[in-house]
Image 1 (cartoon, rainbow, N blue to C red):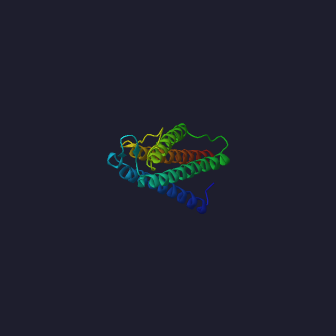
Image 2: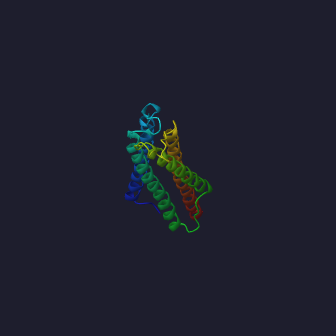
Image 3: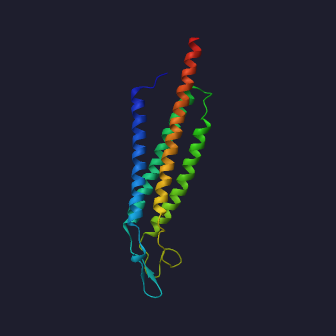
Length: 183
């Protein structure tokens, strides 16, 4: 059964939006890495420390939101595609590679979110005596946002790979059915 052109358009548009949100989140992480607080920004009065808020705070929040939306949209595309195939063929199961890639995407998503939340909250203003944790000031370690950006690429790539593996499998299943009916 051929999918209507409207469904194909929505599917392709969803993938484009997903890729766009992933790219935006990746880019915001790279810019946050550049704009994060540096050691020179730290002020010390002998007992207490102070760090001003950096632009990485707002950029990090934007990266978190776009990455979260991308993960929701990407998984929705994948599971909608799988569900529609299941309605056509009740014996359809997600291929092993698709399940493995979904697991990888969720693991990298979880680690990236934790890194982004911690790094972003450290870039908020850390007032004298308040600090980030126990009244002490903390700087985001170099490469934290870049690591998050790499994990974002892993997540996006895993979901796209999983979606493509379900599409290829479905086309092969449909091809086999057509030959079986003809012969």
